[in-house]
Length: 293
Ligand SMILES: *[C@@H]1O[C@H](CO)[C@@H](O)[C@H](O)[C@H]1NC(C)=O
Ligand SMILES: *[C@@H]1O[C@H](CO)[C@@H](O)[C@H](O)[C@H]1NC(C)=O
Ligand SMILES: *[C@@H]1O[C@H](CO)[C@@H](O)[C@H](O)[C@H]1NC(C)=O
Image (cartoon, rainbow, N blue to C red; front, side, top):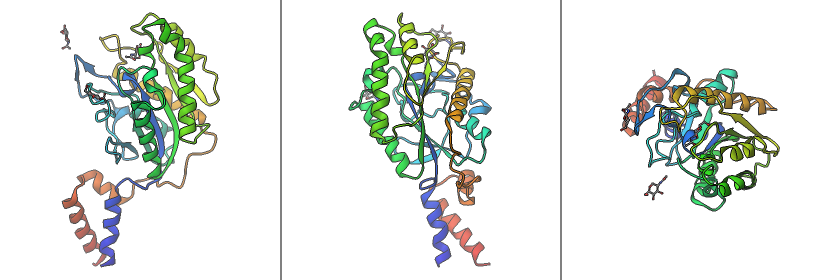
């Protein structure tokens, strides 16, 4: 009878309580992902670099860990049509650089069309991100970095653009202090072009940010969708890899190496055949049978 419960426990916990390298994704539409979205319809194309992988998980809107799949923000940025973003390409790239790393747990928090003022501490976006970040690490793991791609909405008026640098610094300080991770790497993306006329001011603030462990990856030169507003799918892949290089450069000590390099077989079963109470019982019965042969 004891054997009967062992697989049950594994199957019930699914991806929770497993060591994870947690990465927070925040910002506006380009972080959320609009690659392949034309006229509010996503073309459904997922490039090989952004394919799902059992070692890359995603915190769902309901705060449970599931295997990550593009569009990563589909249950978070719910009022927009989401497409491919940089998240999965980033995670796959980091794992390709060091396959010994444990699973990567992505925490999507980006919402399209949001300005830096809306991300201030105490607002909905900030609170939601803080809540998701805390839920993510309580469930086993360490927050390794925050990836940030935002600023387009702040290029429209000079007043907002002028305040961008100060607001972003405040945001970084607040997040670090509320998560009690004063040196967490913060990797941001410098805008390439923008709708508003004050892009140079925002870019200047992004590239000139002088805080410890804050890096900036430059999106200049990456191709846009025909809307001229969002990165295309191939650009999102490239950006994910650039963020991956910046992230790998921040790792002073090796990432957790005790994490399993392969998912445990129970997770594989689930990966292949889905989950749900009936399947769990089926596997329980099968495994029970195996143990008693
Ligand atoms: C998107 O909409 C515009 C304007 O309605 C139209 O000209 C264009 O052909 C559409 N593009 C696609 C790929 O459907
Ligand atoms: C979606 O739109 C509704 C209605 O306008 C709004 O209340 C809600 O905050 C929006 N949610 C997000 C995530 O943008
Ligand atoms: C998306 O990123 C591109 C490249 O940096 C930039 O030109 C564009 O303004 C961004 N769009 C939004 C809506 O943030």
